[in-house]
Image (cartoon, rainbow, N blue to C red; front, side, top):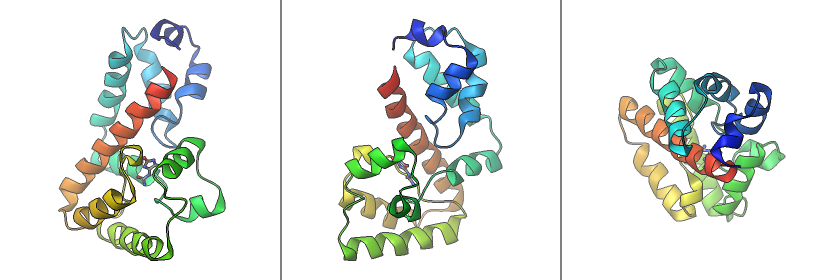
Length: 166
Ligand SMILES: NC(=O)N[C@H]1NC(=O)NC1=O
């Protein structure tokens, strides 16, 4: 779809198509539709960033909390969104050995206990080892820094999901 086709979408169509570019946060697409016409892919992405960046801290943490755990319960139960399922599979997270699976589960738990939101990383650009290393490192960050890191990753995930569509 090119940008002029995007600009022709009704808000219902737009939210249907772009509603999960930020995981389980269709309100982002519903809000940025008002900023049409978008001059380019970059302009569309910039509107999404603008929406996220002006949220209060609780809103940013809310976005992070809409993300499923990596290799967590949703993956096991088959209840991930289509996008997340494909991303986690591409990174091999659906085929972890028992040692990696239990390490990831333990670190995910520690991370959530410390920060109050789940560990979010753009897994399409990473492999199992890089993900585990980043999770272990980021567990030691200060909470204020870590919510900023998480939102940066949300934006990377969003860019790749947008690229799949536009
Ligand atoms: N928790 C987390 O990072 N989830 C995700 N990352 C990603 O690339 N897709 C996701 O669903």
